[in-house]
Length: 294
Image 1 (cartoon, rainbow, N blue to C red):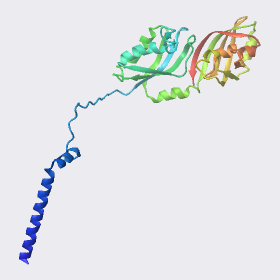
Image 2 (image 1 turned 30 degrees about the vertical axis):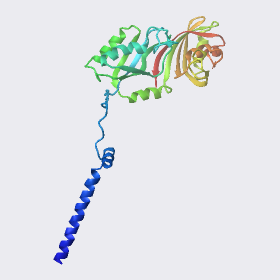
Image 3 (image 1 turned 90 degrees about the horizontal axis):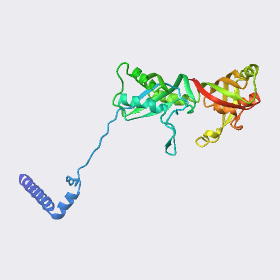
Image 4 (image 1 turned 90 degrees about the vertical axis):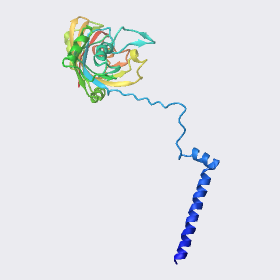
């Protein structure tokens, strides 16, 4: 038994030695070397050019909210450029943006607002809600009194004032946009009429409110707005006689109402118009926004 076990062990050892010699012989062949170099078992060849990894780090956007007043009838809300030609030297956005970008050391900003007024319409009262989205800002806050100093600096323009300026949250941006159509807007207009009118006739206008309007897209904005009929409401109207053919109108309307077209009718595209209600031609001389409210 012992002799047999010894012979079995010797045979097993010989077989193991033969296997090792076979493996070594196979590994020493040129073909095996090529296979190993081409396989994932060997480290890859070093790249001929170094790999470059670029990392960009940017501060999260900073949001400022407030209200602006526009005191000029020759100032658009944003840059007014047609066919590459600037129509006005500045805008509400640019007057506000310049000192804010510098104060927060920001790369750029986006301007958001609850609606907009025409270039020849003033924004008065408590102002129009707006928000600034600052990108690439190196400062997320200003020292005590910094925001008030910005308001003072903006007011030095003489045509734009900002109030209630504060750092706010991005959520307010969506609230501004979502709330545009739900706002009421207060206006004051000076109008010229095609005939002499009495204060009694003007007083009767207020008793007809609310007035439901059907407004086709005005001719003056048809080049940039889709052609559609929009139902709008004039909730309140108070007219004051200034002269036999001139009157001042205080109106409260649904957001999105074209007040100029309500006055003159836009060649019948707004119905009824002020002229329809008074039975004469009517035209608007000047318009102010007095308030934007829920």
